[in-house]
Amino acid sequence: MKCREGCGACCVAPSITSPIPGMPQGKPAGMACIHLAADRRCNIFHSPDRPAVCAGFMADAQVCGNNAEEALQILTWWEQATAC
Image 1 (cartoon, rainbow, N blue to C red):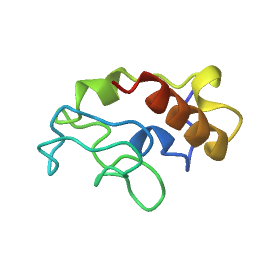
Image 2: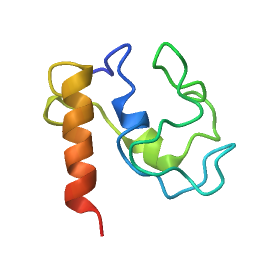
Image 3: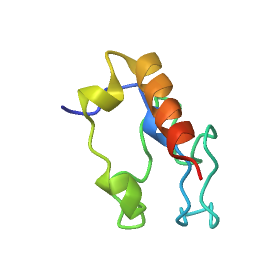
Image 4: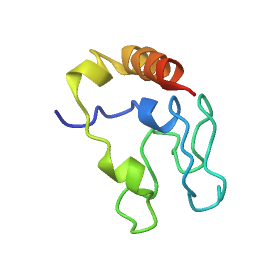
């Protein structure tokens, strides 16, 4: 599955604990990454500075659902279910 254009759920729902350029402490769950553009695309997608956790994420129907709203709901659920 390819990333859905205009989604960006994976840039909002999960917490990221590794440094992100401009966000040295990462980001909390539910907060949009500062690199998420208005068109819901990652501005550092092709950059070597993109965190490994982001580069390793692969779009999948079980995680991304049928639309951007479903993806946000599913990823938020996963974040909450796996929070320590």
